[in-house]
Each structure stands twice: as C-alpha cells, then as structure tokens.
Length: 89
Image (cartoon, rainbow, N blue to C red; front, side, top):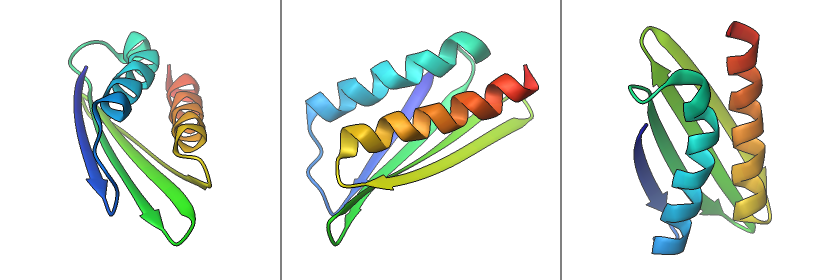
C-alpha cells in the first residue's frame, strides 16, 4: 500500500512515520497493494487530529478523529476506515 503522510503544525518524526505505515498495513490486507492511503495529522489547540483517505480502485474511504493523544487518534481513524471497508467487502 502506498502511503502519503503530511504533518501540519507538528514535528514530523520517523517514529510517527513508522507507526502510520504499520497502522496502514491493517487495512492493506483487506484491499491489496494497489490501494493508497493519504494521512494528514495536525494539532489544533490541545487536540491531536488525524484524517485518513483511502483510495482503492473506484472506492474511497474517509475518516477523521480527534483526541489529546496522536497515537489514540490514529487508532480511532484506522478503526473507522476498517469499519467502512468491512461493510463493503
């Protein structure tokens, strides 16, 4: 799965990159290697926000989540997208 990662108003670290790529593999097993994931993570006041857009063939899945912890936010986003995918597959 091809993964594009963008960070706004926060530091871009290798550890975050690896965590996002690992999380993305959870949905890649449902869709296949030709799927693409576009992650955007940013901070707003005390909130950590993550948005994920997944494209696979003609299917599009979008999820957004907010919490005080970025790792928790990523888990929430993956859960939302996984739920959307499981409804279609």
